Image 1 (spheres, rainbow, N blue to C red):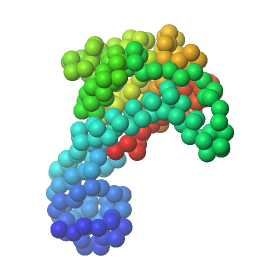
Image 2 (image 1 turned 180 degrees about the vertical axis):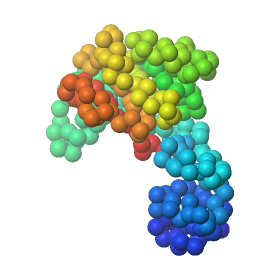
Image 3 (image 1 turned 90 degrees about the vertical axis):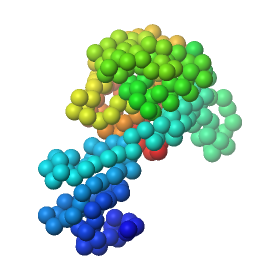
Image 4 (image 1 turned 135 degrees about the horizontal axis):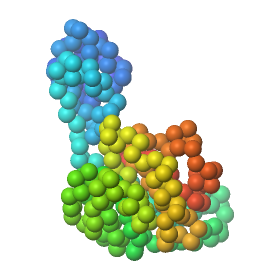
Length: 243
């Protein structure tokens, strides 16, 4: 067994390895070299879209991930960000550093009674639903099969996403990155959030948490009016540091 940082491994060590735990671009060339003995890759992450999947399939190299192990830390990250926004904790911390003592600019609100939409109800989604229910939230979900899940009051299919967005106060997207889900949340869908009535905040239309790093909401990918990117009106974030 060899343990070390990718940049510190010798060429021969990488080529001799039959099993690699983790993955890095720094070892890709040697791990996939014609002389490599690699048979199996076990990733630390659930997502595998950054790996050379075509090449791995061509070489018949087994690939396994850690799907499901991040349910608790990612769920805590979600509610940390939700509470930071609804209770203006981020603004309070900023004012504290500035030694400025004043109430928040906006109106504090509560999660209780709000409708939370989870797109992609897998392990993380189920844990998020469980905690949301404890907060007194109404939870609805979207999954391909439409199959019911614990703590989710109503489950929509992917084809019904537009309908689900119309009734949600908060949207948490936990869809995996696949060809099917790529660009599954478009400008049209976000506009659906804006048009729907909101009881979350008196000013903000919606609280939107983008969970997957592959869909970074910016003006190049999703051209929207400037106000939609304002922190006062929108909370567009991708959580790539939650686990």
